[in-house]
Length: 196
Image (tube, rainbow, N blue to C red):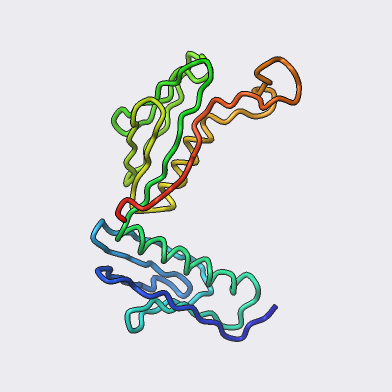
């Protein structure tokens, strides 16, 4: 596949300010500022040309092969998520599931601590990234919030991965083959915007 010229436009929502700075021949820094905060994203060594025009971010690519053409859609999605982040924010919801050993999840400073996972004495400690807010509601609900979707979703996935069992660690709960296995863990159950 070869495309001579392709362009995508991303409309900038009301109340959002965007600045695009060219830092090198193929490098850009995009700053997005809105009511909830500011996000900065670097695009390095990219074949996509970025510019501002009439309240839109214009993404262009010349002599694009399949990879370069695909980057247009990727960058468009990244910019839309940045706009939604600074106007509405992102919230990921997680559920604590246990069958026998009750897990204790708590936030201490900038760390999330998971205790008594499968009755283990060792704690699982995760560092909460800057710009991410974590709240434990009751014994079974965890809420991860922030304006940077990439950061919020990656931390929610890190929480889930910290309690994920693989291979030999995942025995059948009734001592027989083919069962569901141990379902204990913390799972992402959904996401939404902080502001409606």
